[in-house]
Length: 137
Image (cartoon, rainbow, N blue to C red):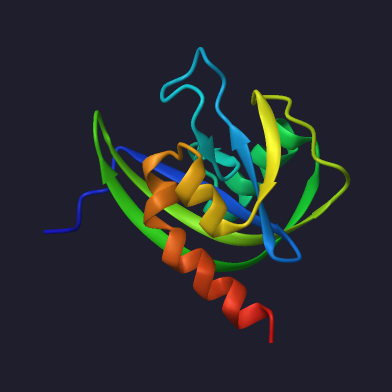
């Protein structure tokens, strides 16, 4: 008996500049409107999660990307089960919010304390902090 796949698989990117990370604000006609999230999206049939993330970053931000490493996963159980994977990403180009209300660079603690995040944003907080600690040496 195999492990059942979650309803949705999502790939999202931790895009950094110095000690800050890029988040996007969800549009007001979307689920969880006005909340901040790491850019990314749902995996389509036949894609790897890395392919998903590169496609989504091109669509959402208009940038090319290089996946550096997988840094965390979480499972959210709401209307559907969503398995979310966070990747460290390097981008080329200036990101633009093609599919979001706005983009903003945040220090992780500032984002968690002062802005409404999607649930995975809170779940990935420690993972993000550890990533910054490892890469700032």
